[in-house]
Image (cartoon, rainbow over the protein chains, first blue to last red):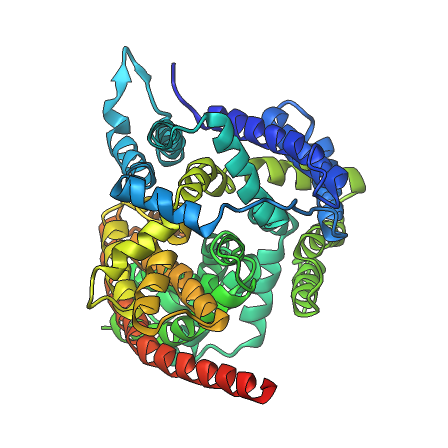
Length: 317
Length: 242
């Protein structure tokens, strides 16, 4: 049997269903019914996303956004342990606490690297297309077993902890997927084509340096809009990079691609659209939702400026 | 000038920028943008919903990396992982938040560059280990931290993980972005070697490290100043109360 990403979807669907169940039973949550409905719909998307017609999934996504948008997703009051309790078990378990935490990245790494060798009778053990994510799933399950054994807790307590953290994250947990969906809607609707048309029509790119700057800054700006350098790359490279920088000015395409994509990443550092990297960590760390972006903006802007010069000098060397 | 490009979908860009600037709820902004953009492209309502649904199912892999580690991390937190990480770092006398971040940045960038992108991440590394360690190292020097300083340390923990990952992984030849670039250029009639694209990412990667490391180095001095002024403000406030 091959472990695929589909198994992870079932696992996540199960975890979310448990979350919905725990939420609906949580009297300390002021919005327990709408919150539970939100997590229940999300569970269905994972459990049956590929059998339900896409139109209905679309409707479910809209309902989820409306519940979240009007404040329907809230968390309950989770009783933290006392400082003394934390310190007591920190002292008792010591460095052993690091073991399950570090087991996750370690197993993910080993799984990813050995996936191509784990083929038995022609059937791969780990789906080769998604080896990192599947290995991450295996790593998390193994780490949970180690953690339960170390702390003498049950997997049920693990589910409760997962629910506690999910509650703290709230709808921010779903935002990356919503934005990923929006990126696909943008490309289906031809937003990229329209942006490329507008940039190439209204900016004079006869001067080499300006053309380079437009490409680099355009990659960053477009990534800020789309939240994803991968979506910006074909648009800017097709619209400016290939016709102007490579064909007209004779620049080196390998340099253009490399520096261009990394300029897009400067955009990723500055945008709430890249929710997975900027908004979700802020929620995880319980700080202001723009705090991570604020910490990153100076690095991103300085690096973007440097990229204009790096591309200009290395592309036409 | 005649054009066969439909410019109406650009309205989506306007909606999303306006939505974020006016601080509407992001989930509502996103769904309204999706519906507005699809309608502007001339899709009938069923196709609008179908496009949203197809996209929502296709992107189900995105929350996995956050959701999967939560049970383990939560369980370990319940047993004092964060407290232990703080105590552990306080044994290293020379540790400061800035130095810790620089070491982490270098490690994250180098491991990502050889393809080990999963040796980090916000749920499994930043929240349980990196942020508590940065707080522990700073507390060790200055005592209890003002909330503002603590939040800044946390923001920089997340930022450092991002910078390290982004400007490391593109040097790795087998990384998806390299494949995407090479395939795109090939379709445009340009042949490039993946290894060349990876190598030309190095100058930017080094620049990214230098810029962010300098900022992290300066962070230590900024923190000292901020803690002093916050403490002074607190003392002043306490004095006036008396």
